Amino acid sequence: MDAGELVPDEVIVGMITERVASGDARDGFLLDGFPRNEKQADALKEALDGLDRRLTAALLIEVPDDELVRRLAGRRVCVKNPTHIYHVDFDPPKHEDVCDQDGSRLIQRDDDREETIRRRLEVYHSQTEPLIGYYDRAGLLRRFDGRRTADEVHAHVRATVATLRLEEKL
Image 1 (cartoon, rainbow, N blue to C red):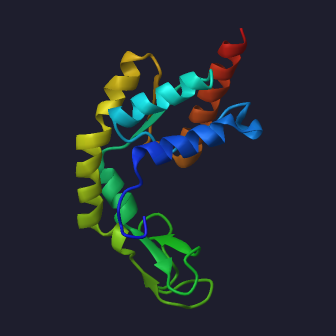
Image 2 (cartoon, rainbow, N blue to C red):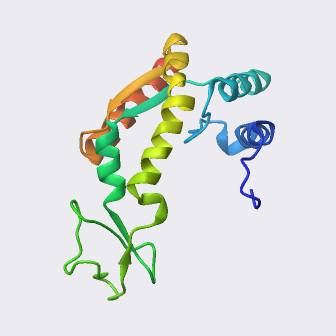
Image 3 (cartoon, rainbow, N blue to C red):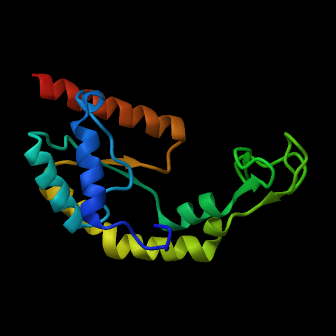
């Protein structure tokens, strides 16, 4: 990682396996951003099989690329305190490019630039998007409309997970 390289799949799967095997994950776990490709999905399944565990669902929050670009490219952060976050359309500061909380300058992070986001989306479409079919064929895929409000998506995800947990107990 320090050299800018990706962490090998075996290391990531090993870390996830160790974490899932811990006592506080006994009641369930949520993975975000992993697996990123079918090879990793196969390795994860094999590792979970070894623990006598399985995935309950794969959650897909669908948002069109142009909307993702608009949402991410509009984000601005405070140079002094990066937890002060604004959005040019959805939550603009009172004064353009000035943090409401401490008066510092607001910036657009490099990873929030449109070109960077579009490159990440290209990688997603070529490497990760095939997982949609992978998990759909396995009967695990659950889709959510990410164009809805954050509160609506959150409520739909929570209801779906609660229903899946209830079904497992029956």
